[in-house]
Length: 275
Ligand SMILES: Nc1ncnc2c1ncn2[C@@H]1O[C@H](COP(=O)(O)OP(=O)(O)OP(=O)(O)O)[C@@H](O)[C@H]1O
Ligand SMILES: [Mg+2]
Image (cartoon, rainbow, N blue to C red):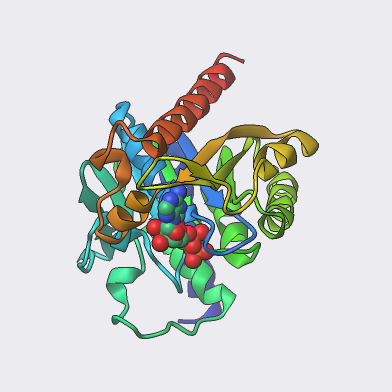
């Protein structure tokens, strides 16, 4: 491919991305400074929450080298490719695309940033999303290339920053909030996950990772506080089984917390539409 053809291909891809994005009413990016704080768990359960309210919802797994969304949805398959386009997976009415099905189990993907960004572009340009009300991007930890690409191409209108209550996570979440501000994502909210451990025997709450770090950060940085989600061993067990707790345990505290976060974000979208 010569330089002229390459430029043309880039231009055409850009066009397809903006066509896709313009058709999706709302776009949420879930990220955090720190790893392992529950971004994927939050992304998946928010998707189920919005889906249950009638939003046609998709998840874009933007964690290219450590994709976990299919595992949490119980999908172990390769995406279908048709005429250079990919069909998203569908589970319980939620659509999803991920690198996971394209990787060999256990094999590391050793790719630099531009290659990872290229895959994210393809997930926007070449996946048949059809009409979505909401697309949620699950990002890898940190403030690297993937979030830049998502910000520039998917144009999120809400950044959900996940932190645990503990200081080392809150410090990293502060970086993530500042990044969302610099990237001019118009709405930013903080979710405090792993906010107290619910004892499976007696139901008492143990503040394993401390208390209140998320709400304090939200106040200090003048962003929305969306809510706290406790640690519930069921959330982890069901997550590993590919069964989101939102669907499996509708009455538990974790699901109620997700429900309330979904309600807050929906209300925010409605209020913004009125402005
Ligand atoms: N509220 C919770 N209660 C119990 N377990 C949880 C909770 N939130 C997350 N987990 C578990 O903690 C682990 C890490 O969660 P998850 O994979 O969602 O984090 P992550 O931020 O996406 O990680 P990474 O940075 O690697 O992408 C998983 O095993 C998940 O099931
Ligand atoms: Mg993750």
